Length: 447
Image (cartoon, rainbow, N blue to C red; front, top):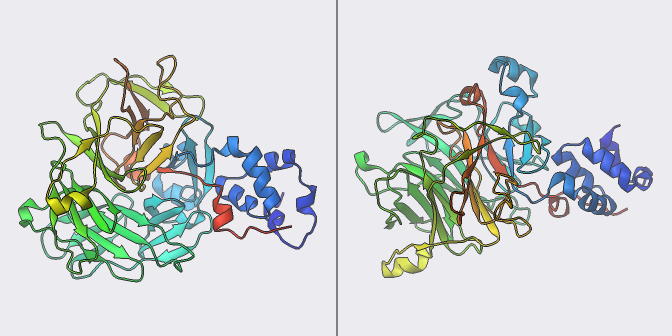
């Protein structure tokens, strides 16, 4: 069937002939983006899909966006590229339900660098851009200042590599942080972005140029950034070395560094640090988990196949996971940067990684499995961490850590294959499919 004909206007009779069962059958064979477009054809279709298809697509539930497993093995990168399918069709995997495909034709010969909502930051040999997943609207982004960083090459292994023109060595792009997505009301020029490198950080507002955020430290002591967000007109970046958080006032033309927030924990443990806004968007949260899960213990737990979505799960001993918060814009005036520990996220869970932090309301989910097993994997009051950079971490695992674990409760881990992943595959990231985009962006028609 030519599904595109269903979305034609003019009252040609196709829509009137469809029943709820027809919609179920059609949508079952469509990927997520085309289902949203189908829903935008008419209010009748939107109502049918939101009612009948909600359980199939699990709208507004964080999922893993990743290459399909069929391309993890037994195919050389050149062969995969030649097929075009490899880099345009991906898997969208709910944590407890069957995976769905998602067609992203604009990703051909591109690699994603970050995401927020329905927007993806991507790069190819020619430059960077923002692309909307559903409308495929394309927004080119300006290049970084040539006097500061020279663009040298784009290969899969380095995705985007940059040479430092004012010193030896290379700075590595970790991700593009989409702090504010472009909107129609803002003529798609109201976006805010952070280009996060391991040793440098740049900030961009739509219609302007990239500005480097300066750190008043000797070159030898330059921060080693690992995550960044924007909150209340300020950019925050955390140092991987010790968890110190730097922040800049973006209204300051010089973007000189005014404040450094000490870490909430000081000890000899190695942590993975993340930043996120609070659920109400008013406070800064810092999240830290032990960074060496599975390394200390040479015995690797066996994989547990999860029939619901085909993922491989593992159980690891509990690891320390902490969440702290503060209102830095208020405390900065008094010079008092005291972190307050958050012992519970209530009905919410955090999903952290390449994507802008997702704070999902999971009121309908349990906080623990009734029988103490790993599933259901989606739970409230948990912190889910994935890859923090476009070049994935050494151990390709995605963690679920409960903030209020029972005694002896294990950490849930999604284990992805190593073979070929480090050379070929893009790092998986969290993405939340949204059917309501049909109402706000796509041309929803009345029939």
